[in-house]
Length: 102
Image (cartoon, rainbow, N blue to C red; front, side):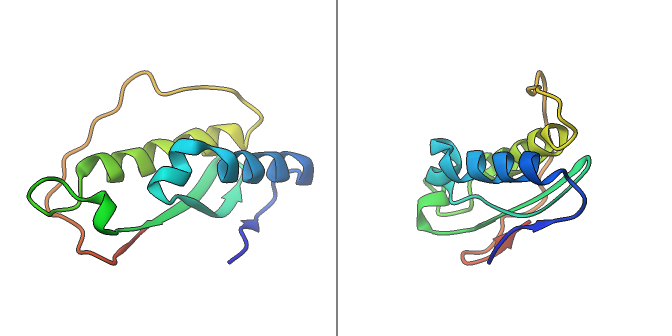
């Protein structure tokens, strides 16, 4: 599925899309871009066996990494370079195997 551009300048959209596709960490986790709008990025990952902790549950790091990647690329869609200085979350359940995280 091809990522959808909702109003980001085409050159910036293509740059962000290509950089996401070429980021080793994103590739390791199976992240892909669904859509990009000014100040908004929608990314996805499908939970697989390589995303589990020793107990067999989806590792919380996958969820937080996806949130961090989405936030970073939302900022980049505004033409701003930035990074996360602090992030935290509370998880109430594990995503089942095969779930699509968005």
